[in-house]
Image (cartoon, rainbow, N blue to C red):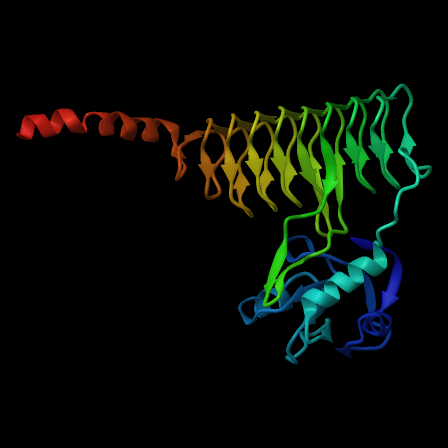
Length: 309
């Protein structure tokens, strides 16, 4: 998430009430999760396991819960609770604004697009030309929808990321300030849920078609011309490259990559990154030919036992 203007390190420290290491006028341009940070961004870290990763990342401002040596060319924000203060910044720069109409006055809807009854279109939503949103589609704030997109009834774009920190009193949610971006010529079935990014974008690439009852987690990027069948669940921060096919009831873990033109057969659990151009099946996932051979051999076990007797 980039800010509407550049802020200084001193200004950001004042918002969260933290100490800082660096020049007062050190430039701060945005805030992001570690997998999408760029120079000028704030990244937060609150566990020693990830200190080095954060300090060595592309982010130039590190919100951290320990005084450490500041890398050259970077700045630190010293906080007793970086998770809390990252939420404070999200609420400050991307505050929730209650709706007062079914279609916000700040939304833009392109020529020849049709919005059926009982849809909700939030603040700063952009919808392109020749789109069709069927009844009861919900589009949260800041969502971007391209041209020639069809979205069927009951689908929700832009709900919060499923991202929590466990505390003694319960689970503390990391507030989502990102967006959903739907590119041109995408089709989305009924009752799908696509969560917005925590600070970045959850993206559905041009020409991709999604069946009914599919879930897409936060910050996931789906490539162009993919096919995703019903009841598939895609976790957060997944990269699905172009022309991937995922059949029904596939589930994935987070933070993996599925290569271009891979085919994931039904009911597969994608527990790791897989190369493109191959077919996969099973849990744990394996190339489908190998997995099917294994299943065939399992069926022969009673016959082999009888022979041994």
